[in-house]
Length: 181
Image (cartoon, rainbow, N blue to C red):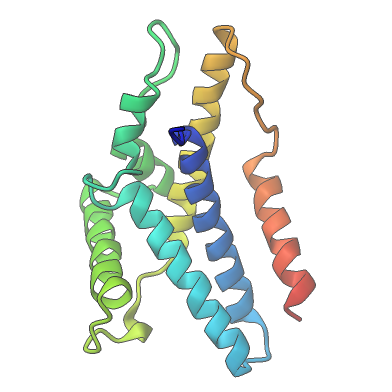
C-alpha cells in the first residue's frame, strides 16, 4: 500500500508551524520571567519557525517549496486567482524585491549554517527577525485558503476552515499565554 501525502495539507501544516512558532517566540521573549527553560523553549520555537519557513520559502529544491505546489495542485483554468508570487509577499510586507531577497538569504543562510550544520561561528543573537516570516506565512496561508475555495467552487468536496488570520493568531497567543506566565 502506497502512502499518499496531500501536498496542500503539508503546506498548511508548515505555514501553521511557522506562524505558531513566531507567536510563541514573541510571547516568551516578552514574559518577565527568563528562566532557562523558557529561553530554551523560545529557541526551539524560533528554530521551528525558521525551518518551517525555509521549507515553504527557502530553496526551490525543497519538496515543500511553494513553487512546487502548483505542479501538484494547479489553479483550475478560468479561476480568478493569481498564482502565488514573490510580488505578493513584497506587497504585503511593503518592502522592495531587494529587501526580500536579502531577508530570504539571511533566513536560508541561518537555517543552513546555524540550525542544520551548527556552525559555532554563527552567533545565535544575530539571528534574523521573525516579523517577515510571520507575515509571509500568514499571507501564504490566506492564498492557500483561496486556492481551496476555487476548487470548492468548481464542485470538489473540500472542507475549508473559516478561521481568519486574526483568529488563528489569537488562538496561538491564547495557547502560549495559558502555559507561559
